Length: 269
Image 1: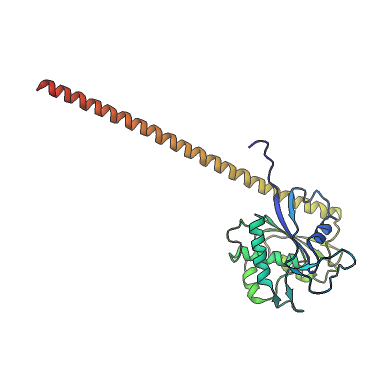
Image 2: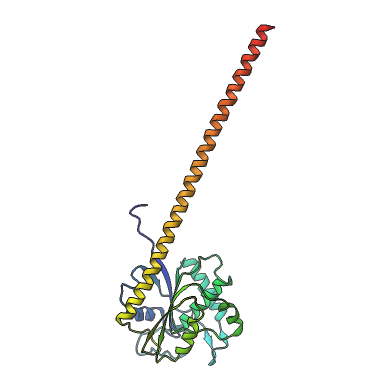
């Protein structure tokens, strides 16, 4: 309908370990606001209160949260399945969502959900996700998870921010290999949401613009399909109605002829 405001694409933004949704929102606010101006960004808090000291104490006010817990080798996880169930329920009830943005633990978790959805393990009734912004993300290391989540290249448009001084630099590079044709943006900083230089801003603006254009094109195509479908139904219904009229007219003519023949027969008798 003309004058109807286009619905924004919706991104679920998952924060890092022992921080919060509001902290990630503040981190992303360092970026040029035009980058995500056409998106609806949702910043929920993790499912569990922080179980220990937060790295942002004294920098950003509490409360702090975490999505799940893990051992020092990142091979064993506690409450991961509960976290996945919680997020799938959140996505289903608050969505639909078009993609994820995540930092550190939030990026790692987002990539897992994307891989699981692609393999039909979760979010089976939710539309396929279309985009992923990973900042300092990594793969899970449990083989039983890897065999499913990263079995095939994940066909979601993805951009991966990798810091030269990030202690997750190599894991972030490894995560990027799990995606089909990823865009990699490198920066000289460490384990943080980086400030973007002009080159990175232009790269990200072009990336989001391409996604928006593709989404708009798909929306137009779907609208035309619906309109054509309705037109086809209307045409078929009209044809059926005309056919019914012709049939009734012919039936009436036959009945009239039969009555005329009966009158002639009666007169002849």
